[in-house]
Structure formats: structure tokens, C-alpha cells
Image 1 (cartoon, helix red, strand yellow):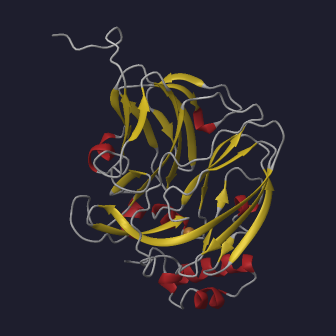
Image 2 (spheres, protein in one colour):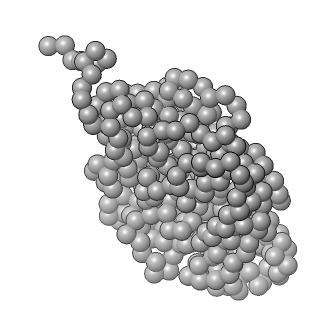
Length: 357
Ligand SMILES: [Cu+2]
């Protein structure tokens, strides 16, 4: 692919980032294989690491917090570059936290202390890092957590303010590429009083990517730096792949009539604002922008989730149906992969809804 940065810009960025590590730019480039384009993460990723899937299971998140006292956590995340299908027959080089898109949901409470270690796989071709929006600190910890392949670094931080926050890779000068390749996730800092109980919780991550090939065409996908620069995304997806969370692909989410479900959604961008809508339902309670310290809002149809932000939104399920959660910028849902299904099974409720003969 064409390098997004000129060689001079690249060396400047490498130098700036290396200064944080106390390294010379040439050491960074040597560690990354001595190839400037690869060192910047601009080339193909994941030597030999072909994954069956990068799609994170939307049910895979820690349970709600039910305790009154703060706790100390130790989290380890690993930056992994893997190749997987973004749609059937179309391999794409991802960059991930722990091999999944979005990365693991880290769930803590206001006042907790977190020790976070970021490992970078020995198989990585470039360095990776992490910026957490839940952190008071330089670069949201990214200034400390710039990690070369095969190495690891740690920070300790206290979660002072509640909310649902993104974390993402923040390598100098290339973070948009790394996020478009899948390097983002969510850290939920629950308020001291906790969240109201619900029947089920789901974890979604939206992001978009920029490829030379359009959706529906055969063959591997190459990253397109020019499309990135113009912000002309070819894919807009939930949990890493085209229509990933649908019955036709990796399976729909499931729930029962009468339940309340909570959706945590983080928008990894790097650039597009999501207009998150549940077709056939409404967000009956929304913590707008993931702000738990602000009263929740009621009955919102499509909620904006800007890149670098998150939302916590709930639905009541009074009738059976398949709810399609979409980005209501509709071309993305119809043609670029931004659809996730929630199958609600149970008894019909003709008092609420019925077809007339
Ligand atoms: Cu990265």
C-alpha cells in the first residue's frame, strides 16, 4: 500500500515516539525489522497469524459490580496482529487487543486501582500502545505504554470518574491506521452505587475501515491510505466484520420477551460518527456519551456515538421480533456491514402490536 506519511515525516514520528522510550529512532526501526513502512504499521500485519475470527462475542463481558468498597485489579492486554476474514472469502490484516475486535471490556468501579500491562506479541511487526480515556495521566497512559514487539510495559492508575470510555492504540502518527485495523475497546467505570439490574448485557464495538476493494468483491483486502485520508470508509462494522453479529454470519444476539437488555457500545472510529438505532425498538434509557454522573435520558431513537466515545443504552422487549441494531447512516447498514441482530423470542403481545387481517 502507499505510505500515508513521507519518509521524513515517518522518521520524525518515530523519533518523537522513541524519545518517550529513551530509544533512538534507528533502534525502533531495527526492532520493527528495519523497514520504515512496516515500522509505521503501514504494511500488511500479522506474519503467519491467521485467525478463524476476530469478532468478539457480544456476551463476553464481566458481570455488573455489586460491592461497596474499592478494589485493586491487574489486567494484561496483548497487542496481536492477525489475519481474518472481514467478510467470507476476504482476508484482512487486523491489529487487535487479545485477538478480538473490540478488545476486552475492562469493568471496574469508581475509586478502584488498576495495574495494566500491555504486552506486544513477539510476532508483531510494529509497536503498539494504549490510551485509556478513563485515566488522568500523560496520553491517557499512552506515553508510558508504547511497546515494541516482544516487550511489555505497565502502569498503575486510579479510576476517579465514572463512565463508559474507549481505550485505543495510540502509536504516534499511525493511530488512525491501527484503530481502523481494530485496536480499540472499552473500559467501564461503574459509579459507586452501581448500575440498575438488567436481564442481559451486550458489548458492541463499531469501527470503520478503508480498503482498496469494495464489499462483496472476492479476494484479500488491502488497506487504502488515500481513502483513509478522504475518510471514505469501505466497511463500517460491529465487532470487527461485515454483518458479524447476524444469523447469517457468526450468530445473532438472543433475548426473551419481557426482558430488559443493556448495550455497551464503543465507537473506535477512527473517523465516523455513529447514529445507533434499534430497528423496531427504542433506547428506553440512555447514558448519553456513557456519562453515568449525568441523569440518563429516556426513549431516544438514534443516538449519536462519536468516534472516541461510548454509550450505554437499554431496551425493553415487549414483543417478539428480530431487532436490527444499525448505524442509521443507512448506506453503512445496507452496504458496508453495520448491522447486528437481536432475536427476541416469546409470546406475541397483540395489545401492543398486531397485523390487521
Ligand atoms: Cu497499535
